[in-house]
Image 1: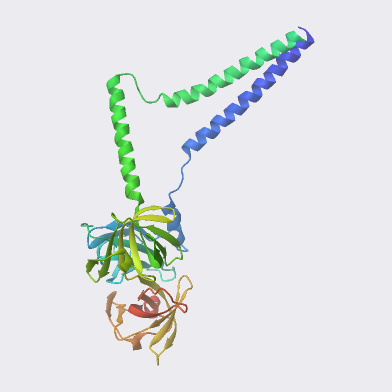
Image 2: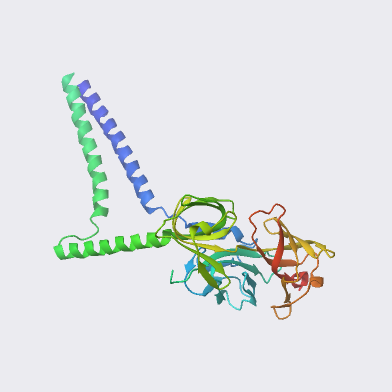
Length: 145
Length: 236
């Protein structure tokens, strides 16, 4: 085999290798982007109030969503919190205080016509933990509108 | 030399073809995951896709139908500018024929006109929100409230006022009026009971509701209601 032929083959293999390397890398990148899991924004917000002890169940409101528009004069507030936590739920028209007996809670809460600003505060049984707060704005708008 | 060039070109092309065909196979494999042989299956797929698109459109519409609230900065030429409590400014686009206007008083609402909405009114707007602009379906003139919690830092017994520092380190001065509904947590029963101003101590935690004001430089409010969590609760 001539020297030039050998050079040409090596050169060809090298170029082909570069192209193959580039394509394989690009494929991997595309695959990675397809499978990437992006954490929902809510989860990021929930982390704000995690107590010092990360093992404790942080206050989490599963429903209703903040900013919800409803056509009834009451809503069901449900969520999760550490057992035996004192929950204080306050709005301009109603105050509620109760001790949670389970880690899940669900209560019916009255709404005034228009905007309802509701603050939910959890005082953990272990008093050394910081209280946790959540705010909700629920809009009760008549269905006839 | 020409021969060399030709050979290198051929080898390059061959290797590139091999690499590209490998890449193509990966893509085709994922694309061909759904069986699309019979036309009935295709019809069914198209129907499902249409339903999904329709549901998504409905979901987006529902998602975009939002409510915002704040104080009116101006009301001119079918545009209301409002500022929220968080100091965000929005433009409210009014439609002469579609937008409805109401004033909420207690549990009742009364229809009003766009011109009745004045600067410093607290309004709730519902409609489709895009960025900082909302196309209004309805506008409600209402009262805005703040619901906060904090610790009592100072008590002025002569003027019946208390200074509070919230968990966000905001300072509030609350005037306790005759009309202020006052209650305190019974630490034995965990229920709220009626209480008076004399029961408040420095270091107590207070949940409070105040009416929002368009202009308030000192964060001084007349309290609508307060709920005291005595410090003894935290020593239990």
